[in-house]
Length: 174
Image (cartoon, rainbow, N blue to C red; front, side, top):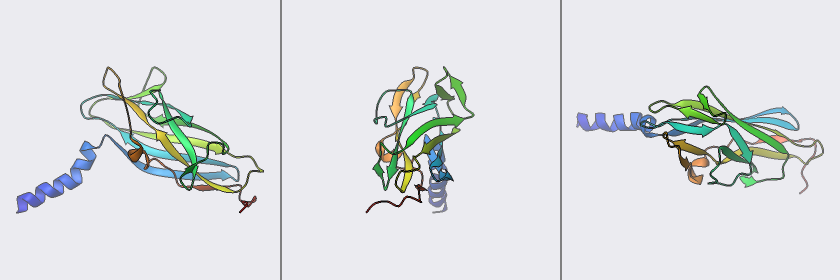
């Protein structure tokens, strides 16, 4: 019985860290002023037996599954996309090795931490709204042949920041 308990506990504690190729660990929204916010999503990535490559750049409103070297994101309010809301730019920052100026490389058997940053700005006369950032496409490439893969929408639901309030002095119309 003790052996089974030990195996069960080992699987519960160790397996998620060993088997998971990616995990998200923090999502934040920092209000800079009434019309500007900095959003961040921190995640780690790595595969046991193959190198993995992730994009540095991000593109707003990139459709899921496009085979491109960018991460897609959208601005959401109450989980509803707002493609016209403000202006936003995103980039991924990491200590991982940069390859070709557009991809990070994570060697096989290692994990690297990445932070996806988005700066969003609204116009001062825009109505009050609570916005968040949602990653809509996270492509990656496996192995030396750089086989294209990407996270599924069900996995991407965890790559969303909390909402933060913009333009609080301009109440929304009801």
